[in-house]
Amino acid sequence: MIFIKLFSKLIKILKSGDSPSQIAWGFALGSIPGLTPLFCLHNAAVLFLLLVLNVNFGAALLALAVFSLFAWLLDPMFHAVGYWALAQIPALQPLWTSLYNAPVAPLTRFNNTVVMGSFLVSLVLLLPVFFLFRALVLKYRNSWDDKIEKWKIVKAVKASKFYDLYMKVKGLEG
Image (cartoon, rainbow, N blue to C red):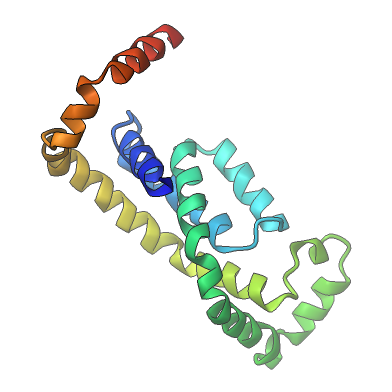
């Protein structure tokens, strides 16, 4: 059931009036809190960016949900990357020590190997996720939209009374 809801949200986002770049940046920025533990200070910064920048907030929420579904499977890899960054690069040890002793920096939980590793991986994946999702939006709008509208299940849903009622209510909202 959750996959049907995610798919319907994805289609709604792809059909929105936002530009492909706005949708893709929303999805890319939403992947950061999706891959990292949610209650970290850097996710507050990502939320601030989502609210300030002109990006699709729905795409960010969709990315948060999608990436959260499988991020826990990647925790061993995140731990390895975080351990490498925190313990195996001697040149960074003074930086980590000074940050740990700073007043606000410990709130980022950067000294946790999984948090550090997932944050670094999410930063590395930021641009590939943007370009991949932008290409997906363009491909959908150029060729897949017409094909999906012809599916029997889509026609059946649109022919139902619930869909008519939904469209009437949606029209009343403005």
